[in-house]
Image (tube, rainbow, N blue to C red):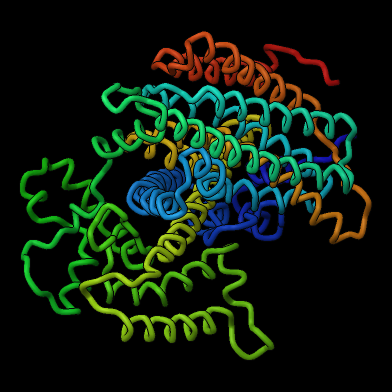
Length: 542
Protein backbone atom coordinates (compact mmCIF):
# COMPACT_ATOMS: atom_id res chain seq x y z
CA UNK A 1 0.00 0.00 0.00
CA UNK A 2 1.42 3.36 -1.06
CA UNK A 3 1.38 6.27 1.37
CA UNK A 4 -0.15 9.53 0.25
CA UNK A 5 2.24 12.21 -0.85
CA UNK A 6 2.13 15.62 0.87
CA UNK A 7 0.35 17.09 -2.16
CA UNK A 8 -2.33 14.39 -2.05
CA UNK A 9 -2.87 14.91 1.67
CA UNK A 10 -3.16 18.68 1.28
CA UNK A 11 -5.52 18.38 -1.69
CA UNK A 12 -8.05 16.81 0.66
CA UNK A 13 -8.90 20.33 1.86
CA UNK A 14 -11.08 20.85 -1.21
CA UNK A 15 -13.38 18.01 -0.12
CA UNK A 16 -14.08 19.51 3.32
CA UNK A 17 -16.79 21.90 4.37
CA UNK A 18 -15.87 25.52 3.84
CA UNK A 19 -15.93 26.15 7.61
CA UNK A 20 -13.29 23.45 8.23
CA UNK A 21 -10.83 24.35 5.49
CA UNK A 22 -8.98 27.09 7.36
CA UNK A 23 -8.26 24.90 10.40
CA UNK A 24 -7.21 22.01 8.15
CA UNK A 25 -4.70 24.18 6.26
CA UNK A 26 -3.25 25.64 9.47
CA UNK A 27 -2.99 22.30 11.30
CA UNK A 28 -1.76 20.14 8.39
CA UNK A 29 2.03 20.54 7.92
CA UNK A 30 1.75 19.18 4.38
CA UNK A 31 -0.06 22.39 3.39
CA UNK A 32 2.81 24.59 4.56
CA UNK A 33 5.47 25.76 2.10
CA UNK A 34 9.09 24.80 2.70
CA UNK A 35 10.28 28.30 1.83
CA UNK A 36 9.00 31.71 0.88
CA UNK A 37 7.58 34.63 2.82
CA UNK A 38 3.81 34.22 2.25
CA UNK A 39 1.50 31.29 2.97
CA UNK A 40 -0.75 31.34 -0.08
CA UNK A 41 -3.00 28.42 0.90
CA UNK A 42 -3.76 30.02 4.24
CA UNK A 43 -4.50 33.25 2.42
CA UNK A 44 -7.04 31.55 0.16
CA UNK A 45 -8.88 29.51 2.79
CA UNK A 46 -8.52 31.73 5.87
CA UNK A 47 -8.48 35.36 4.71
CA UNK A 48 -10.99 35.20 1.85
CA UNK A 49 -14.61 34.03 2.30
CA UNK A 50 -15.67 31.16 0.02
CA UNK A 51 -17.73 33.43 -2.24
CA UNK A 52 -14.62 35.56 -2.93
CA UNK A 53 -12.47 32.62 -4.03
CA UNK A 54 -12.42 33.86 -7.68
CA UNK A 55 -11.16 37.23 -6.43
CA UNK A 56 -8.37 35.54 -4.47
CA UNK A 57 -7.31 33.50 -7.50
CA UNK A 58 -7.37 36.63 -9.68
CA UNK A 59 -5.14 38.50 -7.22
CA UNK A 60 -2.77 35.55 -7.11
CA UNK A 61 -2.57 35.51 -10.91
CA UNK A 62 -1.74 39.25 -10.99
CA UNK A 63 0.91 38.76 -8.30
CA UNK A 64 2.27 35.83 -10.32
CA UNK A 65 2.58 38.03 -13.40
CA UNK A 66 4.34 40.72 -11.36
CA UNK A 67 6.79 38.11 -10.06
CA UNK A 68 7.51 37.23 -13.69
CA UNK A 69 8.25 40.93 -14.26
CA UNK A 70 10.61 40.97 -11.28
CA UNK A 71 12.45 37.95 -12.66
CA UNK A 72 12.78 39.52 -16.09
CA UNK A 73 14.12 42.85 -14.82
CA UNK A 74 16.55 41.20 -12.41
CA UNK A 75 17.94 38.86 -15.05
CA UNK A 76 18.21 41.45 -17.83
CA UNK A 77 19.64 44.48 -16.03
CA UNK A 78 21.51 43.06 -13.05
CA UNK A 79 22.23 39.32 -13.18
CA UNK A 80 23.52 39.04 -16.75
CA UNK A 81 25.64 42.25 -16.73
CA UNK A 82 27.46 41.12 -13.60
CA UNK A 83 27.96 37.68 -15.12
CA UNK A 84 29.56 39.29 -18.17
CA UNK A 85 31.74 41.45 -15.94
CA UNK A 86 32.92 38.41 -13.96
CA UNK A 87 33.68 36.52 -17.16
CA UNK A 88 35.63 39.50 -18.50
CA UNK A 89 37.68 40.01 -15.33
CA UNK A 90 38.47 36.31 -14.97
CA UNK A 91 39.05 36.03 -18.73
CA UNK A 92 36.69 33.08 -18.95
CA UNK A 93 35.27 31.84 -22.19
CA UNK A 94 31.51 31.86 -22.59
CA UNK A 95 31.37 28.07 -22.30
CA UNK A 96 33.24 28.07 -18.98
CA UNK A 97 31.10 30.91 -17.63
CA UNK A 98 27.97 29.07 -18.70
CA UNK A 99 28.79 25.84 -16.83
CA UNK A 100 30.00 27.57 -13.65
CA UNK A 101 28.60 30.97 -12.67
CA UNK A 102 25.41 30.89 -14.75
CA UNK A 103 24.77 27.25 -13.80
CA UNK A 104 25.06 28.21 -10.13
CA UNK A 105 22.66 31.11 -10.50
CA UNK A 106 20.13 29.08 -12.47
CA UNK A 107 20.32 26.02 -10.24
CA UNK A 108 19.90 27.66 -6.84
CA UNK A 109 16.15 26.86 -6.46
CA UNK A 110 16.61 23.27 -7.65
CA UNK A 111 19.62 22.65 -5.41
CA UNK A 112 17.91 23.96 -2.27
CA UNK A 113 14.76 21.98 -3.09
CA UNK A 114 16.78 18.80 -3.59
CA UNK A 115 18.61 19.24 -0.29
CA UNK A 116 15.29 19.49 1.54
CA UNK A 117 13.67 16.59 -0.36
CA UNK A 118 16.49 14.15 0.37
CA UNK A 119 15.86 14.54 4.12
CA UNK A 120 12.92 12.08 3.74
CA UNK A 121 13.26 8.74 1.88
CA UNK A 122 9.65 8.99 0.68
CA UNK A 123 10.39 12.27 -1.13
CA UNK A 124 13.92 11.44 -2.32
CA UNK A 125 12.57 9.74 -5.43
CA UNK A 126 10.30 12.72 -6.06
CA UNK A 127 13.32 15.02 -5.84
CA UNK A 128 15.07 13.02 -8.55
CA UNK A 129 11.87 13.01 -10.59
CA UNK A 130 11.65 16.80 -10.27
CA UNK A 131 15.24 17.15 -11.48
CA UNK A 132 14.42 14.87 -14.43
CA UNK A 133 11.32 16.94 -15.21
CA UNK A 134 13.29 20.16 -15.14
CA UNK A 135 15.83 18.51 -17.45
CA UNK A 136 13.14 17.72 -20.01
CA UNK A 137 11.86 21.30 -19.85
CA UNK A 138 15.28 22.95 -20.12
CA UNK A 139 16.61 20.73 -22.94
CA UNK A 140 13.46 21.31 -25.02
CA UNK A 141 11.63 24.56 -24.21
CA UNK A 142 14.58 26.66 -23.02
CA UNK A 143 17.08 25.32 -25.57
CA UNK A 144 14.48 25.60 -28.33
CA UNK A 145 13.57 29.13 -27.29
CA UNK A 146 17.22 30.21 -27.46
CA UNK A 147 17.58 29.00 -31.05
CA UNK A 148 14.28 30.66 -32.03
CA UNK A 149 15.32 34.00 -30.51
CA UNK A 150 18.84 33.96 -31.96
CA UNK A 151 19.84 31.15 -34.39
CA UNK A 152 23.57 30.48 -34.20
CA UNK A 153 26.38 28.10 -35.04
CA UNK A 154 26.97 25.79 -32.06
CA UNK A 155 30.50 24.86 -31.09
CA UNK A 156 30.70 21.17 -31.99
CA UNK A 157 33.06 19.91 -29.30
CA UNK A 158 31.40 21.69 -26.34
CA UNK A 159 27.98 20.49 -27.51
CA UNK A 160 29.02 16.84 -27.82
CA UNK A 161 30.89 17.06 -24.52
CA UNK A 162 27.86 18.43 -22.65
CA UNK A 163 25.51 15.86 -24.17
CA UNK A 164 27.87 13.02 -23.19
CA UNK A 165 28.26 14.21 -19.59
CA UNK A 166 24.53 14.75 -19.16
CA UNK A 167 23.78 11.28 -20.49
CA UNK A 168 26.29 9.91 -17.98
CA UNK A 169 24.56 11.83 -15.17
CA UNK A 170 21.14 10.53 -16.24
CA UNK A 171 22.49 6.98 -16.42
CA UNK A 172 23.90 7.27 -12.89
CA UNK A 173 20.55 8.49 -11.57
CA UNK A 174 18.64 5.87 -13.56
CA UNK A 175 20.82 3.13 -12.05
CA UNK A 176 20.40 4.55 -8.53
CA UNK A 177 16.62 4.49 -8.95
CA UNK A 178 16.75 0.92 -10.19
CA UNK A 179 18.84 -0.11 -7.17
CA UNK A 180 16.60 2.01 -4.88
CA UNK A 181 19.56 3.37 -2.92
CA UNK A 182 22.50 5.77 -3.10
CA UNK A 183 25.61 4.85 -1.13
CA UNK A 184 28.35 7.16 0.14
CA UNK A 185 30.64 6.20 -2.74
CA UNK A 186 27.80 6.84 -5.20
CA UNK A 187 27.16 10.32 -3.74
CA UNK A 188 30.86 11.18 -3.90
CA UNK A 189 30.85 9.89 -7.48
CA UNK A 190 28.19 12.45 -8.40
CA UNK A 191 30.27 15.34 -7.04
CA UNK A 192 33.46 13.94 -8.55
CA UNK A 193 31.84 13.68 -11.97
CA UNK A 194 30.81 17.36 -11.85
CA UNK A 195 34.34 18.42 -10.85
CA UNK A 196 35.68 16.33 -13.72
CA UNK A 197 33.15 18.01 -16.03
CA UNK A 198 34.29 21.52 -15.04
CA UNK A 199 37.95 20.53 -15.41
CA UNK A 200 37.19 19.08 -18.85
CA UNK A 201 35.53 22.34 -19.92
CA UNK A 202 38.53 24.37 -18.76
CA UNK A 203 41.03 22.05 -20.46
CA UNK A 204 39.08 22.01 -23.72
CA UNK A 205 38.94 25.81 -23.72
CA UNK A 206 42.69 26.04 -23.05
CA UNK A 207 43.48 23.59 -25.88
CA UNK A 208 41.23 25.52 -28.27
CA UNK A 209 42.86 28.87 -27.42
CA UNK A 210 46.34 27.39 -27.77
CA UNK A 211 45.53 25.91 -31.18
CA UNK A 212 44.01 29.20 -32.31
CA UNK A 213 47.04 31.23 -31.18
CA UNK A 214 49.38 28.86 -33.02
CA UNK A 215 47.29 29.09 -36.18
CA UNK A 216 47.35 32.90 -36.01
CA UNK A 217 51.15 32.88 -35.75
CA UNK A 218 51.50 30.82 -38.94
CA UNK A 219 48.80 32.68 -40.88
CA UNK A 220 49.58 35.48 -43.32
CA UNK A 221 48.64 39.00 -42.16
CA UNK A 222 46.74 39.75 -45.36
CA UNK A 223 44.78 36.50 -45.31
CA UNK A 224 41.21 36.98 -44.15
CA UNK A 225 40.21 34.56 -41.41
CA UNK A 226 36.96 33.23 -40.15
CA UNK A 227 35.98 34.67 -36.79
CA UNK A 228 36.38 32.34 -33.84
CA UNK A 229 33.68 31.64 -31.30
CA UNK A 230 34.89 34.29 -28.89
CA UNK A 231 35.37 36.87 -31.66
CA UNK A 232 31.92 36.22 -33.06
CA UNK A 233 30.44 36.60 -29.61
CA UNK A 234 32.36 39.85 -29.14
CA UNK A 235 31.03 41.22 -32.42
CA UNK A 236 27.54 40.06 -31.53
CA UNK A 237 27.75 41.63 -28.11
CA UNK A 238 28.92 44.93 -29.58
CA UNK A 239 26.02 45.05 -32.03
CA UNK A 240 23.20 43.51 -30.04
CA UNK A 241 23.99 44.12 -26.38
CA UNK A 242 21.76 46.31 -24.27
CA UNK A 243 23.31 49.53 -22.96
CA UNK A 244 22.48 49.20 -19.29
CA UNK A 245 23.78 52.61 -18.39
CA UNK A 246 22.03 54.55 -21.15
CA UNK A 247 18.72 54.50 -19.32
CA UNK A 248 20.30 56.06 -16.25
CA UNK A 249 22.66 58.53 -17.96
CA UNK A 250 22.45 61.98 -16.37
CA UNK A 251 20.90 64.79 -18.37
CA UNK A 252 23.46 67.43 -17.36
CA UNK A 253 27.20 67.08 -17.75
CA UNK A 254 29.87 68.56 -15.54
CA UNK A 255 31.18 68.17 -12.02
CA UNK A 256 28.56 66.57 -9.80
CA UNK A 257 28.28 66.48 -6.06
CA UNK A 258 28.06 63.25 -4.10
CA UNK A 259 24.36 63.82 -3.44
CA UNK A 260 23.65 64.41 -7.14
CA UNK A 261 25.49 61.23 -8.09
CA UNK A 262 23.44 59.23 -5.58
CA UNK A 263 20.10 60.68 -6.75
CA UNK A 264 20.87 60.14 -10.42
CA UNK A 265 22.16 56.61 -9.81
CA UNK A 266 18.94 55.68 -8.03
CA UNK A 267 16.69 57.19 -10.70
CA UNK A 268 15.32 54.42 -12.94
CA UNK A 269 13.45 56.82 -15.23
CA UNK A 270 14.91 58.44 -18.35
CA UNK A 271 12.74 61.49 -19.03
CA UNK A 272 13.90 61.82 -22.63
CA UNK A 273 12.79 58.27 -23.46
CA UNK A 274 9.58 58.75 -21.45
CA UNK A 275 8.39 61.52 -23.81
CA UNK A 276 8.75 59.34 -26.90
CA UNK A 277 7.27 56.11 -25.51
CA UNK A 278 3.77 54.82 -26.23
CA UNK A 279 1.12 54.58 -23.54
CA UNK A 280 1.58 50.80 -23.16
CA UNK A 281 5.33 51.21 -22.70
CA UNK A 282 4.73 53.92 -20.13
CA UNK A 283 2.36 51.70 -18.17
CA UNK A 284 4.89 48.87 -18.23
CA UNK A 285 7.61 51.28 -17.10
CA UNK A 286 5.46 52.50 -14.22
CA UNK A 287 4.97 48.88 -13.14
CA UNK A 288 8.73 48.29 -13.28
CA UNK A 289 9.73 51.46 -11.40
CA UNK A 290 9.43 50.04 -7.84
CA UNK A 291 11.32 46.89 -8.86
CA UNK A 292 14.09 48.79 -10.63
CA UNK A 293 14.50 51.25 -7.75
CA UNK A 294 14.77 48.41 -5.23
CA UNK A 295 17.28 46.54 -7.38
CA UNK A 296 19.34 49.67 -8.05
CA UNK A 297 19.51 50.20 -4.30
CA UNK A 298 20.53 46.65 -3.45
CA UNK A 299 22.41 45.19 -6.44
CA UNK A 300 25.71 46.72 -7.65
CA UNK A 301 26.42 46.46 -11.38
CA UNK A 302 29.90 46.56 -12.91
CA UNK A 303 30.19 47.45 -16.61
CA UNK A 304 33.71 46.88 -18.04
CA UNK A 305 32.73 48.65 -21.29
CA UNK A 306 32.36 52.03 -19.55
CA UNK A 307 35.28 54.28 -18.72
CA UNK A 308 34.26 54.46 -15.06
CA UNK A 309 33.00 50.82 -15.06
CA UNK A 310 29.70 52.12 -13.65
CA UNK A 311 31.43 53.31 -10.46
CA UNK A 312 28.97 55.34 -8.37
CA UNK A 313 30.84 56.07 -5.16
CA UNK A 314 27.94 57.00 -2.82
CA UNK A 315 25.65 54.27 -4.16
CA UNK A 316 28.33 51.57 -4.18
CA UNK A 317 29.26 52.40 -0.58
CA UNK A 318 25.59 52.23 0.40
CA UNK A 319 25.33 48.86 -1.35
CA UNK A 320 28.17 47.52 0.80
CA UNK A 321 25.71 47.76 3.69
CA UNK A 322 22.44 46.86 1.96
CA UNK A 323 23.55 44.05 -0.38
CA UNK A 324 24.97 41.75 2.36
CA UNK A 325 21.82 42.46 4.39
CA UNK A 326 19.70 41.35 1.45
CA UNK A 327 21.82 38.21 1.11
CA UNK A 328 21.20 37.05 4.68
CA UNK A 329 17.50 38.02 4.60
CA UNK A 330 16.74 36.23 1.31
CA UNK A 331 18.84 33.08 1.89
CA UNK A 332 16.41 30.38 3.03
CA UNK A 333 13.70 33.04 3.48
CA UNK A 334 15.67 34.88 6.16
CA UNK A 335 16.14 31.91 8.51
CA UNK A 336 19.87 32.56 8.83
CA UNK A 337 19.41 36.32 9.09
CA UNK A 338 17.43 36.19 12.34
CA UNK A 339 19.68 33.59 13.97
CA UNK A 340 21.32 35.04 17.10
CA UNK A 341 25.06 34.60 17.54
CA UNK A 342 25.75 33.56 21.11
CA UNK A 343 22.29 34.74 22.10
CA UNK A 344 23.41 38.37 21.82
CA UNK A 345 23.14 39.78 18.30
CA UNK A 346 21.25 38.45 15.28
CA UNK A 347 23.22 37.74 12.13
CA UNK A 348 21.60 40.64 10.26
CA UNK A 349 22.82 43.13 12.90
CA UNK A 350 26.39 41.84 12.65
CA UNK A 351 26.21 42.11 8.86
CA UNK A 352 25.02 45.73 9.12
CA UNK A 353 27.84 46.65 11.52
CA UNK A 354 30.55 45.05 9.38
CA UNK A 355 29.06 46.46 6.17
CA UNK A 356 28.90 49.98 7.63
CA UNK A 357 32.55 49.83 8.67
CA UNK A 358 33.60 48.58 5.24
CA UNK A 359 31.47 51.22 3.50
CA UNK A 360 33.01 54.00 5.61
CA UNK A 361 36.55 52.92 4.75
CA UNK A 362 35.66 52.66 1.05
CA UNK A 363 33.96 56.08 1.00
CA UNK A 364 36.89 57.97 2.52
CA UNK A 365 39.55 56.01 0.60
CA UNK A 366 38.08 56.58 -2.89
CA UNK A 367 36.90 59.45 -5.08
CA UNK A 368 33.88 60.09 -7.26
CA UNK A 369 35.89 60.31 -10.48
CA UNK A 370 37.95 57.11 -10.58
CA UNK A 371 36.91 53.57 -9.59
CA UNK A 372 39.15 51.79 -7.07
CA UNK A 373 41.39 48.93 -8.07
CA UNK A 374 39.15 46.35 -6.39
CA UNK A 375 35.96 47.67 -7.97
CA UNK A 376 35.59 44.39 -9.92
CA UNK A 377 34.73 42.64 -6.63
CA UNK A 378 31.39 44.46 -6.72
CA UNK A 379 30.48 42.24 -9.70
CA UNK A 380 30.62 39.16 -7.45
CA UNK A 381 28.50 40.90 -4.82
CA UNK A 382 26.00 41.95 -7.47
CA UNK A 383 25.97 38.45 -8.96
CA UNK A 384 25.19 36.80 -5.61
CA UNK A 385 22.57 39.40 -4.68
CA UNK A 386 20.77 39.24 -8.02
CA UNK A 387 20.91 35.42 -7.98
CA UNK A 388 19.23 35.35 -4.57
CA UNK A 389 16.62 37.89 -5.74
CA UNK A 390 15.85 35.50 -8.61
CA UNK A 391 15.80 32.60 -6.18
CA UNK A 392 13.42 34.42 -3.80
CA UNK A 393 11.05 35.44 -6.60
CA UNK A 394 11.12 31.95 -8.13
CA UNK A 395 10.31 30.45 -4.71
CA UNK A 396 7.22 32.63 -4.45
CA UNK A 397 6.22 31.61 -7.97
CA UNK A 398 6.56 27.92 -7.08
CA UNK A 399 4.46 28.41 -3.93
CA UNK A 400 1.72 30.21 -5.87
CA UNK A 401 1.66 27.50 -8.52
CA UNK A 402 1.51 24.82 -5.84
CA UNK A 403 -1.42 26.60 -4.16
CA UNK A 404 -3.29 26.92 -7.45
CA UNK A 405 -2.68 23.22 -8.07
CA UNK A 406 -4.29 22.37 -4.73
CA UNK A 407 -7.27 24.63 -5.43
CA UNK A 408 -7.87 23.18 -8.89
CA UNK A 409 -7.21 19.60 -7.64
CA UNK A 410 -4.36 18.83 -10.01
CA UNK A 411 -2.68 15.47 -9.39
CA UNK A 412 0.85 15.18 -8.09
CA UNK A 413 2.12 13.89 -11.44
CA UNK A 414 0.63 16.71 -13.51
CA UNK A 415 1.58 19.30 -10.90
CA UNK A 416 5.19 18.12 -10.78
CA UNK A 417 5.65 17.82 -14.54
CA UNK A 418 3.96 21.12 -15.39
CA UNK A 419 3.48 23.83 -12.78
CA UNK A 420 6.35 22.92 -10.44
CA UNK A 421 8.75 22.16 -13.30
CA UNK A 422 7.88 25.46 -14.94
CA UNK A 423 8.27 27.31 -11.66
CA UNK A 424 11.67 25.80 -10.86
CA UNK A 425 12.94 26.62 -14.35
CA UNK A 426 11.75 30.21 -14.52
CA UNK A 427 15.16 31.54 -13.47
CA UNK A 428 16.85 29.41 -16.13
CA UNK A 429 14.49 30.56 -18.86
CA UNK A 430 14.67 34.28 -18.09
CA UNK A 431 18.46 34.30 -17.69
CA UNK A 432 19.13 32.22 -20.82
CA UNK A 433 16.58 34.01 -23.02
CA UNK A 434 18.02 37.36 -21.93
CA UNK A 435 21.54 36.24 -22.81
CA UNK A 436 20.33 35.03 -26.21
CA UNK A 437 18.63 38.35 -26.99
CA UNK A 438 21.75 40.25 -25.94
CA UNK A 439 23.94 38.32 -28.37
CA UNK A 440 25.27 35.49 -26.17
CA UNK A 441 23.39 32.43 -27.51
CA UNK A 442 26.39 30.12 -27.03
CA UNK A 443 26.69 30.98 -23.34
CA UNK A 444 22.94 30.53 -22.88
CA UNK A 445 22.88 27.22 -24.76
CA UNK A 446 25.90 25.99 -22.82
CA UNK A 447 24.12 26.99 -19.60
CA UNK A 448 21.13 24.82 -20.58
CA UNK A 449 23.23 21.68 -20.31
CA UNK A 450 25.73 23.01 -17.77
CA UNK A 451 22.88 24.07 -15.49
CA UNK A 452 21.02 20.76 -15.50
CA UNK A 453 24.28 18.81 -15.18
CA UNK A 454 25.03 20.99 -12.14
CA UNK A 455 21.52 20.43 -10.74
CA UNK A 456 21.45 16.67 -11.06
CA UNK A 457 25.05 15.96 -10.03
CA UNK A 458 25.39 18.50 -7.22
CA UNK A 459 21.73 18.28 -6.17
CA UNK A 460 21.68 14.50 -5.85
CA UNK A 461 25.29 14.12 -4.73
CA UNK A 462 25.35 16.88 -2.12
CA UNK A 463 21.81 16.11 -0.93
CA UNK A 464 22.59 12.43 -0.32
CA UNK A 465 26.00 13.23 1.17
CA UNK A 466 24.48 15.61 3.73
CA UNK A 467 21.73 13.12 4.55
CA UNK A 468 24.29 10.31 5.08
CA UNK A 469 26.42 12.55 7.31
CA UNK A 470 23.38 13.79 9.27
CA UNK A 471 22.01 10.31 10.01
CA UNK A 472 25.40 8.56 10.27
CA UNK A 473 24.12 6.05 7.71
CA UNK A 474 25.85 4.21 4.89
CA UNK A 475 23.24 4.90 2.20
CA UNK A 476 20.07 6.78 1.32
CA UNK A 477 16.99 4.69 0.56
CA UNK A 478 14.90 5.68 -2.47
CA UNK A 479 11.20 4.98 -2.94
CA UNK A 480 10.50 6.23 -6.48
CA UNK A 481 7.14 6.29 -8.21
CA UNK A 482 7.68 3.87 -11.11
CA UNK A 483 5.27 5.50 -13.53
CA UNK A 484 6.63 9.01 -12.99
CA UNK A 485 10.25 7.90 -13.22
CA UNK A 486 9.86 5.86 -16.40
CA UNK A 487 7.87 8.56 -18.21
CA UNK A 488 10.42 11.20 -17.24
CA UNK A 489 13.41 9.03 -18.06
CA UNK A 490 12.00 8.09 -21.46
CA UNK A 491 11.20 11.70 -22.38
CA UNK A 492 14.58 12.99 -21.22
CA UNK A 493 16.43 10.22 -23.02
CA UNK A 494 14.55 10.82 -26.27
CA UNK A 495 15.16 14.57 -26.13
CA UNK A 496 18.90 14.03 -25.66
CA UNK A 497 19.05 11.47 -28.47
CA UNK A 498 17.12 13.80 -30.77
CA UNK A 499 19.60 16.64 -30.15
CA UNK A 500 22.59 14.30 -30.42
CA UNK A 501 21.44 13.10 -33.86
CA UNK A 502 19.84 16.21 -35.35
CA UNK A 503 22.43 18.85 -34.43
CA UNK A 504 25.39 17.13 -36.20
CA UNK A 505 23.13 16.51 -39.20
CA UNK A 506 22.58 20.29 -39.38
CA UNK A 507 26.37 20.80 -39.29
CA UNK A 508 25.83 22.38 -35.85
CA UNK A 509 23.93 25.31 -37.36
CA UNK A 510 21.00 25.63 -34.94
CA UNK A 511 18.01 27.11 -36.76
CA UNK A 512 14.51 28.15 -35.77
CA UNK A 513 13.22 24.87 -37.21
CA UNK A 514 15.30 22.93 -34.68
CA UNK A 515 13.89 25.09 -31.88
CA UNK A 516 10.32 24.56 -33.06
CA UNK A 517 10.90 20.78 -33.17
CA UNK A 518 12.06 20.86 -29.55
CA UNK A 519 8.96 22.81 -28.53
CA UNK A 520 6.77 20.32 -30.44
CA UNK A 521 8.51 17.46 -28.62
CA UNK A 522 7.68 19.01 -25.24
CA UNK A 523 4.04 19.59 -26.23
CA UNK A 524 3.79 15.94 -27.30
CA UNK A 525 5.34 14.90 -24.00
CA UNK A 526 2.74 16.89 -22.05
CA UNK A 527 -0.08 15.38 -24.11
CA UNK A 528 1.17 11.85 -23.32
CA UNK A 529 1.38 12.73 -19.62
CA UNK A 530 -2.15 14.15 -19.56
CA UNK A 531 -3.59 11.20 -21.48
CA UNK A 532 -1.87 8.86 -19.04
CA UNK A 533 -3.15 10.88 -16.08
CA UNK A 534 -6.76 10.71 -17.22
CA UNK A 535 -6.54 6.99 -18.00
CA UNK A 536 -6.65 7.21 -21.81
CA UNK A 537 -3.17 5.66 -22.04
CA UNK A 538 -2.39 2.87 -19.58
CA UNK A 539 1.23 2.36 -18.58
CA UNK A 540 2.11 -0.60 -16.40
CA UNK A 541 4.19 -0.08 -13.30
CA UNK A 542 7.67 -1.53 -13.45
